[in-house]
Length: 100
Image (tube, rainbow, N blue to C red; front, side, top):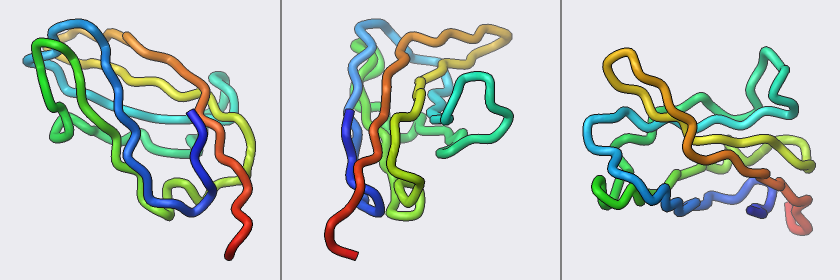
């Protein structure tokens, strides 16, 4: 998924599984081994559209996407009562902006 640096964007997702009862979290890092995050972690449970289908969106602000242009490792994590699942991992590309 590509976004332009400094843009306010909505990232849709579809997990293909029932996520009712889970907290939904999103984060992105330069490398999975990093201790620091480029974006997040942020809880995005309020942005679930259809719990049984596992669809929703992630709202990123201009400050979230104001990171160095490059490829980031991103994931959605589900948490509930001692369970942790990572149903979606993807690359988030922050592309350079032309107009500043």
